[in-house]
Length: 276
Image 1: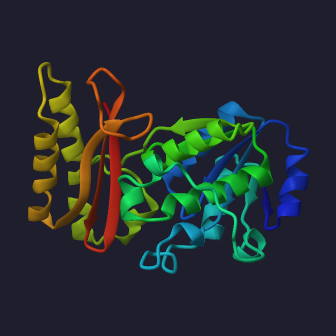
Image 2 (image 1 turned 180 degrees about the vertical axis):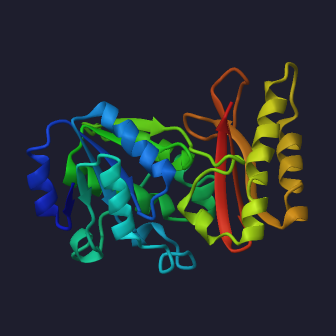
């Protein structure tokens, strides 16, 4: 496995790599990431992973400074998973001057749910991903469904900008108790980790209700699901059901839907979703 810290090195290696699948990450890798790496190998001759903690997608009060940087351990996991190339630039390499050109996702996509709660987040995500795609020039790029809104924004960006890359979604990987694997799970205390699967259980119960035949009072179901969390120490942002294609409120029940949740447990904000 080759580790590249410069754009020039990554581009030179890519020219000899055949069909490439890229998995962008911020490091601190877990089994969900590694599952994506193995899935990527099914779509390419070589798998490339990027590791870069992207400052411009973090808000001023978010966890950029304390986000774990675990490059050595990450590279061991990637090598074991058969990844051929790791692009691990520092900030000076990715942003040699202050970033003044940005990708602005469609307001209807970026101002709802996490986009409303984290203003500018998806602008930062879309900008760095476009930059990574330009650097690595992969044939395919894989993104996990756990970050469902991110996947939606990036899929639409690639399509509307006619980028020559196939976006491949990866299924959410869960612990045995249902908790979606996330780098931020490491912030949870022992008691919080035991409580954390409740978010998945609420989503599962909401999905099960909506799969029953008959009419559904969606607002009531969403409100009740959110309302059960605070008694267990949660501060919910939302539990809601949206259309998969654009995360707007559904207009009919026979279109593909997804239930999404975001809530804070202690100092850790967790997100999850279930397709319906």
